Amino acid sequence: MAQNHTAQPNGAAAPIAPAKFAHAVLRTTRLSAMLDWYCTVLNAHVVFQTGTLAFLTYDDEHHRLALAAFPGVVERQPRAAGLDHLAYAYANLGDLVATYERLKAAGVTPVVNINHGVTTSMYYRDPDGNKVELQVDNFPDAESLRAFFKSAEFARNPIGVDFDPDELARRYHAGEPAAEITRYNAEKGLNRATMARLGE
Image (tube, rainbow, N blue to C red):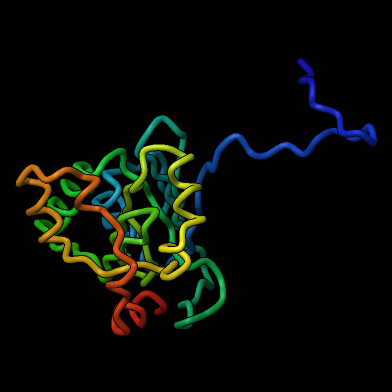
């Protein structure tokens, strides 16, 4: 059945945004290690696999990530142009903390931890060196988020501040409100070592 689209003044159909982001595909030379890592980190499962290709999902989407180990794939050069990282959002701070603790127990730890103001984020590296951000939104709604983007505090420091994930987890388990734990303080700044790791 044909769908109706809103017409623009010149009679052309209005642009249509995608309904959702469906999946990402990563080339790899380490298919087995990458499969194990993403299944562990995202709590995903394999829906189809060959010797050179695998499809994974963690929800009702047919696949959220594909890994391709096609012949001729070469290692990516450090600081090469292209995709910087993949980001996955959790429903609340408790889910992010539980995931951090589960992964830490499995020997998987973040390389960078940053409160960006808009999100509280933990950055990991997969076996190929790709960055994967696990995050939680710091605001309850889009209106609050838009207001923060316009604030002097965000303009003062739009990158973020470091945090200790173990201290964050301790405060969460002590019952401190999530809004207080993730409160943004632009004055703390982002230290140079963290900035360097973030840009690697």
